[in-house]
Image 1 (cartoon, rainbow, N blue to C red):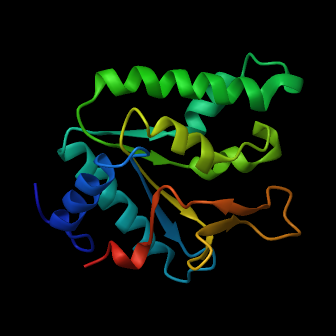
Image 2: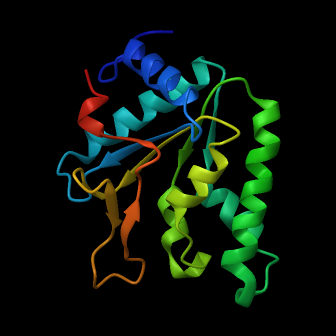
Length: 176
């Protein structure tokens, strides 16, 4: 354990303790969508993942999970079925792991290929059973407690997502 370059393990522990007290046990870390320092962000995400695993949690790659689930689903029912299958998956995980889940590639669910699912609402629902930490590139309107994924011209654009009932912070707040 230890040896973190960017994150403060004590802060991470405090964040997780805080979210465990809430109905929705979710920590949404907002990554600036236009960040210039991609390498630093990659290292920060890897450190968060490592911290989660060292504290009894697990990393869940939502892209891999969505691909596996969607392989046998009719395209017409994709979004709805994918949501239900992912909820069941997180329910099973809540019994299997003792720590939080670090969910990576959650933003893949906004894509039309996966039914344009609101990934934040899905994870919020799942966080009732298991503490969830995720990092997603979003624009965050702090005063309105809303986030936006993508840009209006993007096919996976998802505006004005309510994040009032979950803990949201910028990636800068996680860094030492």
